[in-house]
Image (tube, rainbow over all chains, first blue to last red; front, side, top):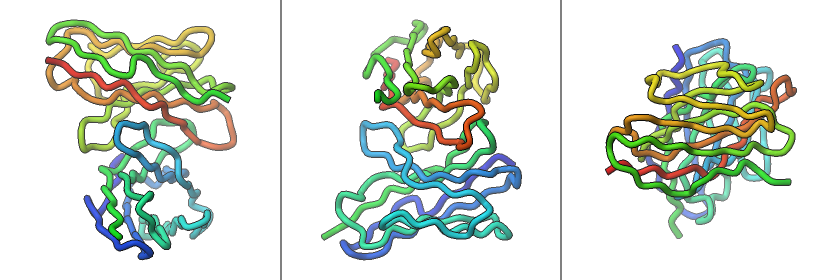
Length: 111
Length: 114
């Protein structure tokens, strides 16, 4: 019940396109859903996060869509740039409990 | 404002040895969590320390132990190293009782067991 499932495993998007990564969770106690961006050799960096009381959150080119009834959330990257090429992880937790991570999506933006 | 700092950056050990990894939390944070990230995988929770005590623990054997000091810094110790312990070890910090669940990660320690 602690799993967070993430897809796709890898994604190739043309520069200027929209990148979409999906996650699904099982534990309805989760109340915080962050997305982390990780570059090779670096630790995960918080990108954007959402709580289940809203259905969408937008920060610049990054948007989280949240569907509480379906227990799904997704990351949309608009106008994708080569600098967005990285591995993206969705995660979930409640309170200050441990983060449960998805398996990651390797995003490659091609010119 | 210093973020989460970890040392050393890289470490090479042989099977059966013991290793100690160190973490200093972000300024103002009092809770430290450790994660193991195998190559190509998402981080897996090892344990969390708050008020110098282990508050939560993931599915890791007793060979993995930790400590938190009065200044909130933390150590991760791994005994009797196995080849499978080779991974990136990440430290994350947060503020207990804060209004947000945000955990900030360090750059990690890359451990190679030969």
